[in-house]
Image (cartoon, rainbow, N blue to C red; front, side, top):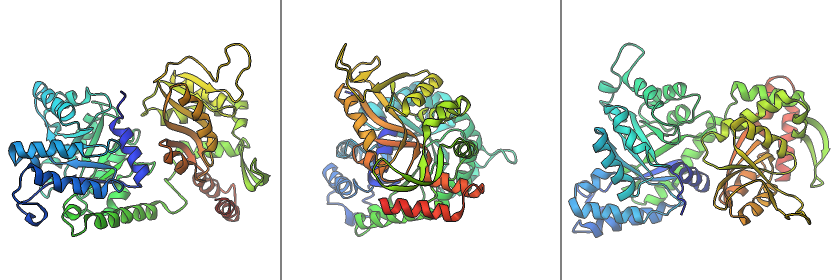
Amino acid sequence: MTHQSFVDKLTGAIERNHSLLCLGLDPDPRRFPGHFRQPVDADSLVVWGTALIEASSDLVCCYKPNFAFYEQYGPAGLEALRRTIAAVPDNIPILLDAKRGDIDSTAAAYARAAFEVWGADAVTVNPYLGRDGVAPFLAYPGKMAFVLCYTSNPSAHEIQEFGPEGKPLFEHVLRQAQTWGSQTQIGFVVGATQPHALARLRRLTSAENYWVLAPGVGAQGGDLSATLAAGLDRNGQGLIVPVSRSIIYAEDPRAALLALRETVNWTKLDRTGPAQSPKVSDEQQALILGLHELGCVQFGQFTLASGQFSPIYLDLRRLISHPGWLKRAAQAYADLLRPLTFDHLAAVPYAALPLGTAVALTISKSLLYPRKEVKSYGTGKTIEGVFQAGELTVVLEDLVTSGGSVLKAIEPLKAAGLKVSDVVVLIDREQGGREALAAQGYRLHAVLQLSQILETLHQAGRISGEQVAQVKNSYQSMS
């Protein structure tokens, strides 16, 4: 049986539940006795925890049980932790907050406990002992270690800001930990009370989109808007916002969590603007301008395959006549594919076939493609290429609109026993494709979004504000 990785579970839950919130499970009957059945035993702690899980499983991206709050009750507390973890739905990850760190042999025992005994998908770790104390946690495929970098407690600066001017300890931790593992193995803990450290992390890890756990929103007073502005990566992702006391001890935890989720989503929307999802990088800007020059992005009056009229037409087939730009597009795909786990690429015919070939050559990966017309002679294959049932496949398409063509292409892949979780495209038209794919359990990764293309071309003086409005109005009327 193939188990989903922490990142797969996390991104799936974020998309499915529209939430960046991670609910901390910190049972504290001493401070909040009215929330627990008396006497406080394993059953009492389990009733409390499972009630929170049942009330929140459609509103969170992750659960974060705090080991210390269970350990304080001895064997009964640890039994409660086991049963509470077992109550978490399989498609939501568990991040065990244990802050482990020791010499290699001891760290290996801690890692076995976290992942093999408690069944966690990720764990917080202390980097003070260096690489030796973290490496055992990275030996488990699909699991993740969140390295303490700059914590949210008031006196954190006394240690974590220590160092020569401009070279504080927390930055040294950031630099070193990036050499220990990939962004699917290593994450960072940076408090929401430290937005300057969040911003610094994003600058020091600009080439890789590391996941960040940012505790401190809520009871500790972290500024939500500043946290999102500094902590989200260049794709508007990469941030987990844990909440605990302000939610789990509220009069109505579900109502409090729902309100906070909406606040986070609206704050995130205000940060990027309703039609501007994340700002483009220099490479994205160059690609957009190049696609326009090649005629891959055209403006005028066009009839689409659906029979509807559109003021914009995207013709990515033209890329195949310009090898330099085709190579550049392939590299952009490769950058999105790098953090994903897969055995094959599967290109959707026909427009994505040359793109798929270019990408496969760029990253040295096997390429498959589902046939549009099944052969009536020879082997009668529905899928071209060499593969085995059970292998992981990323579907590659040139663009996505409603998602229908991609879903149709996935059907024969699944029928042949291949497993599909991710779809990668050059352009997302932002007309419901992402949502349609997510509803079927697939994650969409796009190099560019249509709104980014429009904004970039307008800023470059290539199109007028009136043309931008015309395209947006046209697409709203189609949706």
